[in-house]
Image (cartoon, rainbow, N blue to C red; front, side, top):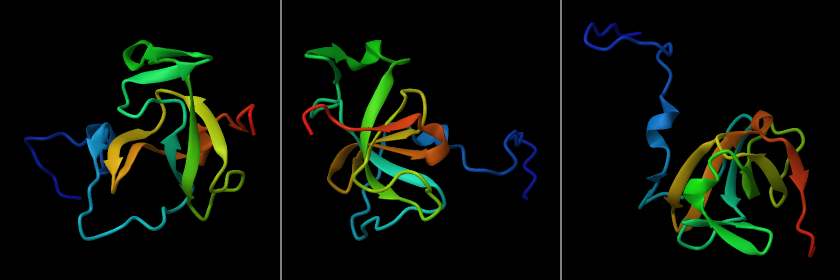
Length: 127
């Protein structure tokens, strides 16, 4: 590990994922094909197209009012160490978990999280 006196390393050299929250991951010449370990790449299923509102029952609520709410997302990619969840499942998890990405090669409202961060698998009532 490189020791930089001007910057104290409080996380053991790991990437500070919080800095990437809400960013865009546009890989112009590449496409993300798989995720590693127990990582899930999911697309929020309870959000409007422009990412400003979350659906609760039959009403749309401004996203800035649901910081501590439960979220629903559809699994797009699942890492090889995921034991419970597979691609196509819908999952529930607290809103404060995962790293949100606004745009990933044309997919909007993406979240990356570990399988251990989710609280369950669910399905839409109309399924």
